Length: 216
Ligand code: G3P
Image 1 (cartoon, rainbow, N blue to C red):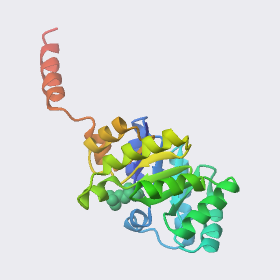
Image 2: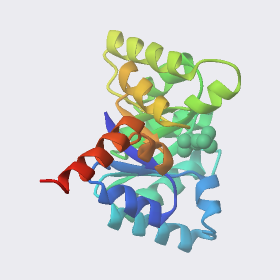
Image 3: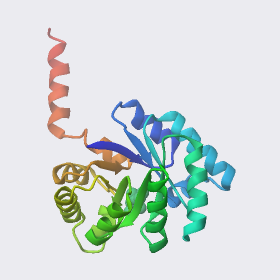
Image 4: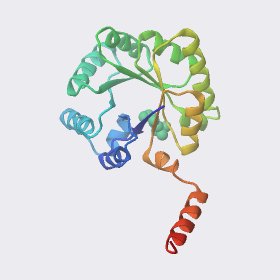
């Protein structure tokens, strides 16, 4: 399973990248706004800075909701760097745009996916990645991990090549469950990635080893 970090924060991206386990970055308009990035030039510059930090796929989301403008916007985003993947929302025009991008050699990440039906459409349109939002499904009283399992089963039976990119990850357990369910990628906040490190017995064990090392 590939590890992406889900943030627009350059310091967090750098910290995760220095672990040596980072395969890419996802952003969205909320995450970009949180970093105070405003205006077309600043947005493009920020994506460029992320691409220069991490050698992997970087999702950059279109802000339009209508086919022609999505295509124009996506072409501009893709021109920023070869590693840019154009993130497109799961709406009717989004599906048309994903098909256009796929036919024209531009890679895509279909976002805001909450059902198996949406996942089938994204794959049929030729999306490179599809992003089911695990945490938000859990928040609504359903089971996000069940959707990953269902998508894995459908994609394998049908031979779809679209990669399942589990998003809206809230904790380390989500990451473990996504790996178990067969997600191709998990995009996580830095805290969830670092949460994988934690176990009290590791801390207790290390403290004892360091204490005993003094007697060596
Ligand atoms: O990038 C999309 C997704 O990961 C958003 O997560 O925590 O806002 O539901 P969240």
